[in-house]
Length: 356
Image (cartoon, rainbow, N blue to C red; front, top):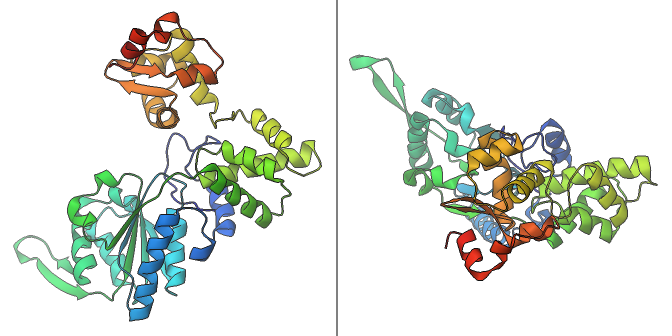
């Protein structure tokens, strides 16, 4: 069970949305692993991070600054808490949007204890003045506090105790190179494989005192879009269904029936995802079609279709973005049980379809 960011997005209210709502945050606090050995998945990241932390403990020094990037719900916040636990240090949690002025950051940094872990979520959204102050703090453990204004302003150097900054971002490309280069260890969190998510579901079910068989766990894992946070949310909804409609045991049939009620299909697509595909296939013959036209057909805002529905559909190979517009792939026709037009099944048509 590995979860993280709590950013506000249009997908926040979706059952398969990766952002955490208040219910998720409350449950995740109880389900989060406390040690690196308990953390499921992300094998490469865990191995590398384990070496970094062990070496720091052996030297009796604070750990290097850590940058974690990846989609929401993959475990960045959880790893930051594990880093603090492994280093036997307290942790301070804040976010980039909460730091709008350099003075906000200076107040946080000046109150840190030696060895403390500062977790800065959505670090790419921090203001530029605070970002520039962070450069010196990370490298020299010092900040210059400006007192006064205009020609009479003076800079007072403030020494900081050694600390470990753990930055988390869903958009690593927005971080300026000077900030990115100051992290001693960087890791990218990958989406989970179904087998890993099955382990996540089993562990969560055990902690939540929910009975589930292997087939039931596999059914939930297969619809979780590679994200542990979604797997745990689906588990809770299936648990509710099993308690009301069955004897409490989650089997494959119970899981499938429960998720059908919540409109999450076998590949993890929800109502919005299927609406986009159905409009693209049934109204526009598979495309190409412009984003604005597709959004009107679905009855959603352009940003909602582009930022909420499309990323997963593209990742699943159901939709492609081309210079001519959005087009459906053969997998999309197959998933909805539809037959593509004759022009899209020919060799030349296929080339035209993908803008080749």
